[in-house]
Amino acid sequence: MITYQKTDDLSASAKITYLNMRPYYERYSVDWDCEKIEQQIHDLVNFDILLNGEIVGAIRLAFDNDGCYIRDLQVSEQFQSKGIGALALAECERLAIDSGVNTLRLRVFKISPAFHLYKRVGFVVDHSDDRFYNMSRTIANK
Image: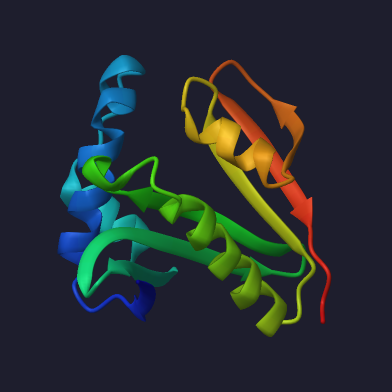
């Protein structure tokens, strides 16, 4: 069963991001480490993704007048391709609706397989550059 909880340990959460993103950082010569990630996520709304009580990923959100920005959605490699990312996106939508916003936004590396998940659940590319797609999806407030 997938559940979510507010992140208590930002250091451990940053490590999940670092381990998942390290190939991208290396490919694009991005100078990031766990400490820098932890500094960046400190002021975000951070949730752990749990599978049967075990932390298997992280969600990081930022809210503004333009909607909910999914700053990070990570699922540990051994738990990928099991539907957890799609469920986490549904949780992001629920949190956005609860906050009264009607747009989800995110940025994804063009070479990331997560791009296909985002397209499948209705995100569209708003614009792109040499590395990233900037995507959004309108959601209905209930």
